[in-house]
Length: 114
Image (tube, rainbow, N blue to C red):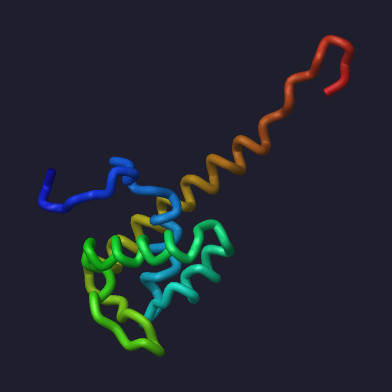
């Protein structure tokens, strides 16, 4: 691959949970497992949130070492700002697709009932 060893469950495209985690973590100064877990509102377990933070470290968005109380420091750079904008666009696009899908009328059955 391109120098990064990925786990056997990691898909080729970016995971939607990882995108949501980036969306919540990049604006923060420090990120902890608990803070990110609360922001994701239980969509991921704490152990998977820990893995998401490890992936952010590998991708260069978060520093590897951190304070026990404050958490790991989020790196604020041009790259992270650009990635945050990409994530916002991707999540906004996904939300628009979901809203459009909900707005589609349900097909009527033969007897006129939905």
